Length: 324
Ligand code: DGY
Image (cartoon, rainbow, N blue to C red; front, side, top):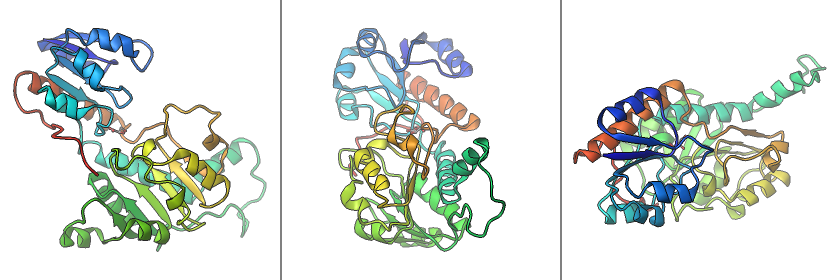
């Protein structure tokens, strides 16, 4: 069968695909231009795509022979899953494998912002480290005893809660559905309303999927409810937060800072307002970017596609669009 990859994947993964299928790999500038994608998908049975590819109804319709789509990501908001399912196309994704790496990056951002890690690094590199060990110099914030508010208590939210417990933080959460009582006990987490999450937390961390229901759900109205000393962490999807409102809240010191791995439009440039703010730590959408995790994601992406194309159930199949 014929397969299209919208960018190169690990060598071992491509080798695996080539053993069974006729593979075409787009190797130009990312993302693959839309017109090219629409023309190249026409004779393909399978597609490997990435979170920045827009696999909408038009692309899916153009793929007249398409039987399977496999995304190299846990998020699948870039795929019109309803249209795909309607056409009998199987959609595969890569959950579970990236839970730990993304939760680790969340904690890295949290620690970086609480303890001013990147700020300190920049200070030394600019030769501005003048005061040694001053009692009031370069103070950050303790994690101990602080309240972490988790928005979206799925796999990654729960992995973050487990890590935060190790730092003696208190955990509040808000989710579509409340967890079972024993699960809450294990995580030491208390279910609260969105309002309470934003008013009570010292740091909010976002771990919900991006859906029409979560689009810009975190906006000025909610940011205004946060403590002036509180931080916002986002390793989920940029569009869950109204970025314009977040910039406004940070500029006007309505909140103390942010740690961000995802943005409204990626990649952002060094002209973006976030790059001018000392109290914002930014990373380039690297939640799952570890050697081990990305390699395992590649293995699963290929396995999902190969299984689906041979009429079998993929390892991880998107069942329907999530309603948040
Ligand atoms: C995903 O897989 O959706 C993540 O955003 C990648 O880091």
